[in-house]
Image 1 (cartoon, rainbow, N blue to C red):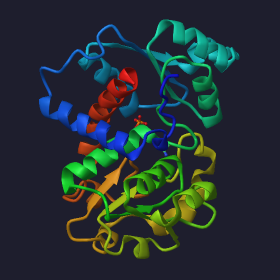
Image 2 (cartoon, helix red, strand yellow; image 1 turned 90 degrees about the vertical axis):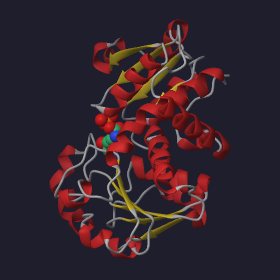
Image 3 (tube, rainbow, N blue to C red; image 1 turned 120 degrees about the vertical axis):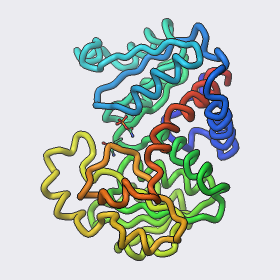
Length: 298
Ligand code: CP
Ligand code: NVA
């Protein structure tokens, strides 16, 4: 049975730490990298836009001597209703791993259930686990071990927030979530996380004394029609200098990007000294290289 990575909790805490350690090792090595994916092909299916995920997977596989294949969903037979289960069986005969970014976690599960190679979630409606590998790597690089620390998620209870919830539970840090009414994360996931996660209404309460402040767009891909309504609901949740001042003086700011300056974060914060967003984006590369090595050797 192949190992899949459809959500962060598909790996144990020890495995996540191992992948992050390896990512840091590859990053330190930078050049003269091993050809650990030599002869391996990764198929990457995208039905949604991407800059970081596409480029980091494609460049990362190339750095380790492998080949990545970009498949735009609509340009494949998936776009003409070929069953995803048939697609899984066919791709499994030709490539060594499949990455998929789409709208439906259920479709990803069906793809994985019918694949004999690892399937990786490159973002769906419910999770963005690859993002969290990079986010955690970045946090550790800047501030050391995570156990006992506090992160504050300010904004939408969305796919990235869900992966942060899983991270808090698995890696033993606290996550406070401040979101407007009606935009809460999955209640099932909150119940699973127990006291690792605390849901709060006010952004200021969540930010108080936090070690890390993190946010994401208020309007995720596919929600464009709700944009005006969302903008109104989320206005009190902008991460600005005043909110950052409530966190610890050495707190860092993260954002998975793409960002909307003046909405979920001010330019002053994202382009300011506490922001680590460029390291975070770069770490997508190293974290996913380590993930692919892990899944392909498993
Ligand atoms: N953070 C992230 O996944 O970026 P892309 O949408 O550009 O891949
Ligand atoms: N929540 C965002 C993340 C983009 C990387 C979205 O789903 O569009």
